[in-house]
Image (cartoon, rainbow, N blue to C red; front, side):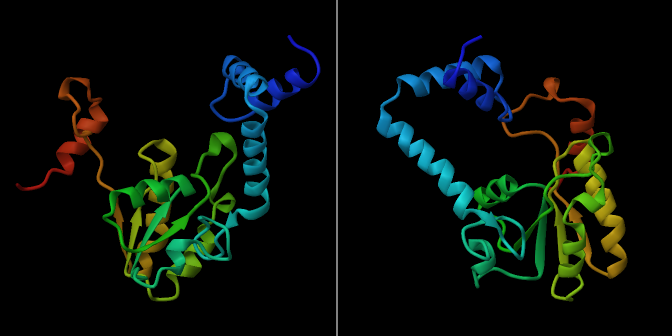
Length: 197
């Protein structure tokens, strides 16, 4: 559509997840009209992320040193391990303020259609961590979709024989939701996971 540098920028932005052709074009023209200082800050932030950010050697969360801040926190318990798919899931759980254990980031979920099997995830590293004997409970906090369920089921079958309590996050109706708009699976899980009041 365009030529030269602006088309190159649109093409590169379009490769980002969740950015379609129209969004890429809007962002490119915003960058073009933005103050040069703002563009330099963005370019510097992108370079710094690639230079400084790595994966924690213990849990595989994002970190700027060998270990992430959660793994360095001595106030957290080693007895409870929360397994998530991606580093962004750690942030979601942390926002609740309810969890005081440790994490393990798998780096995705089992998805045969995409060619992602157990060997493509950090399951081997999880088994090594669980094998130390410190972990008493494993919380499976994978996404409540087909891939997340398959991953949770696989992990449960692998870890239960080790004598560790394996739990799954409850799922059901969102706060503020209406029953009439809930799908059958969500409503069914809400009934299964009901609790006394």
